[in-house]
Image 1 (tube, rainbow, N blue to C red):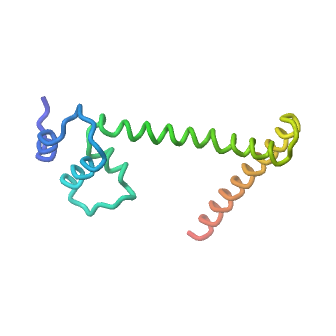
Image 2 (tube, rainbow, N blue to C red):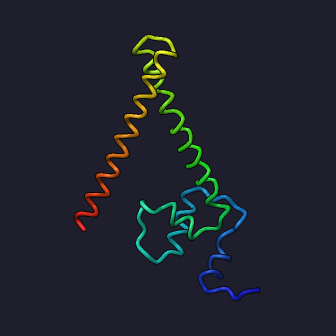
Length: 123
């Protein structure tokens, strides 16, 4: 068996790898083992690095489900809103929805290209 570092030994004694910790307890454990000032921006990255893999998995699953739900729900809501506003059939509203989606995509592409050009020119 490989030799454990002092940090790993301390972590092994205080953290149960099979237990799912509530967020408050997990944050307290992170604050115990991380010597740097703690900020909320890097919370999930910090948890992923410091705590055993079984503790972080539910957070990652929740993030993935929420992201997927939003990616599906927002276009669906836009389509339903267009159907209600235009008061036309699906076959007349779907092309409008497609053109609007294409316009959003082109706008995003131009924004990204413009941002990259601005970044390249100001370096």
